[in-house]
Amino acid sequence: MCGIAGVLSWKGPARPKMLHKMKNRLTHRGPDSQGIYLQGPVGLVHTRLSIIDVSGGSQPIISSSGRQALVANGEIYNFKEVRERLELKGRAFISHSDSEVILQAYLEYGLDFLRHLAGMFAFAIWDGERNSLILARDRLGIKPLYYLVGRDFFLFASEKKALLPFLAGEPEIRPEALFETLQYQFLTGEKTLVQGINRLPPAEMLIVYLHRRLERRRYWSPATLRPRRLGFEEARDQFDLLFEEVFVQHLRCEVPLGVFLSGGLDSAVILACLRTLKAGPVRAFTVVYPQDPGVDEFARARWVARHLGASLIPVRLHPEDIWPHLPRLVWALDEFMWDPACVPTFFLAHTAQKHHLKVVYTGEGGDEVFAGYGRYRKGFFLRFLRSVARVSYRGRGHWPPLWQEKVFGHPLKAAVCQPPFRWLWAKSPRSWGFVTRAQYVDIQTELADDLLVKVDRMLMGHGLEGRVPFLDHRVVEFGLCLPSYLKVGPHQGKVFLRRWAEALLPRDYLWSKKKGFHVPLDRWLKGPIISGLQKTLPHNRALRNWFDPGGLRELLTFQEGRGGLGGLIWSLIVFALWHRIFIEEKGEPPGSREDFLDFMA
Image 1 (cartoon, rainbow, N blue to C red):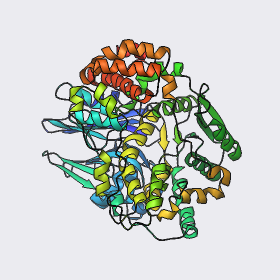
Image 2 (image 1 turned 135 degrees about the vertical axis):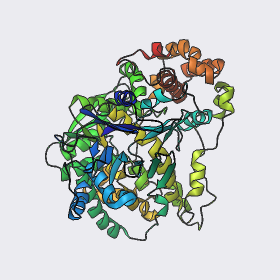
Image 3 (image 1 turned 60 degrees about the vertical axis):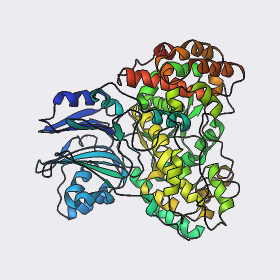
């Protein structure tokens, strides 16, 4: 894991001052070392978190001719296999780093090189022979990459905060993007909330030429997959071989590792595979809400950790411990998204860092790849229909129309947009069944733009690498192509994964009802904290620009009395903090323990 950034100047040589400013905004992603490449119009920046080839593997990596240079973030899990093939073709390597295979594969295969790589990555290659800068992002969007097209330069970076100082004017918010984020907790697509800053979509390559031309290429799409007809036994045998190969490759690292254990199926399977395929102890971390014991799954996490012989480290969250860290959490998040699960993930990462870990495994992707969400079970009852073209998917947002009318200001009301899921649903192959189409939509939206943002930013904010074996593209392709009867049943999803995991875990555990990763926001946002918010939120500069102060007061009064609006208030808190940090202060980091009410005032 690392941070990368760079500039391609269209007017004179690249300026070192720009590179150093971007580097300083990314040191949390790579605290071990930093490197800069500066050659004529191009400059590349790398901040390193050492995972593989700890003693070597520094970046930028320069080709033997000196004409090409690479900076990369992430891991190429099949780097040993790719390296062996390249060496047989005569390619000479200067390190044992997984990142070097990216550059060597490009030199050998040209722009077709990405199909040879399996991993999570975002990288940039400067090719001085072709005067082009090549950016690419992994197939699922596990690693982030943003860019800014200026009048005299092209900039890119792992996080938006490294680009904000170089906007032509003050940062401006796109109203339709703010409306979408408030409704769905996250923003989909290429454009960000800040006008002028874009993110490279997953599975895309962007080629930027010195003469200012930009060319985009998509190198992978789940829409090309076709469902397969196979029975459970055949699928099980194939997945046995596939997942062992994938998991062994994901275990390649030279540093201590752990796992985030929720108590659910996905993280339990990851822990079971770690205990099976890795020698030595494994530390597991789980969240506990001492004041809300019915919310967490500590009892299940403790049971599965004991069953698998792992050391379990509980992370106890009290609301009074959370508020001082909130500005720093929002700064680490970089995007405005208000998924409450960012809070426990932040504190899990904080604790793992204290235990001197550098790599943590999570179960992200299990629900999307193997159809675990309750909403997928609609497909069980539609499975006899010849076509599901008229079936809609995920149209409702979080803000009810009544509270939109009361709280949203005129700019937000004018920015109402269609649910982003609808056009992706229409774009998905009509030959697919409901479940596969729903998986496709979720993989392209909530997974890429919410869950993976949460994991990357919360962990990298603590100098941790997060690995997600279920999101290796080979596993994703396998899961999407399963027949529907191996995905959902009348009462539960993830039918195949549950049956397959019976070789690892007891049936009673695997087939118990899913509880989910809940955060007790509504209880946290009661009592004295509401009094403080009533004095602060209606007067906040950002909120007054976008929301009605009277509506804000009514919302807070309702929460103080009847409750049930904690999620809506949380979205306002996060937006107010985000606006202060990224719009008013252009990404400058807050103090490590700021009073969030004072910070919003």
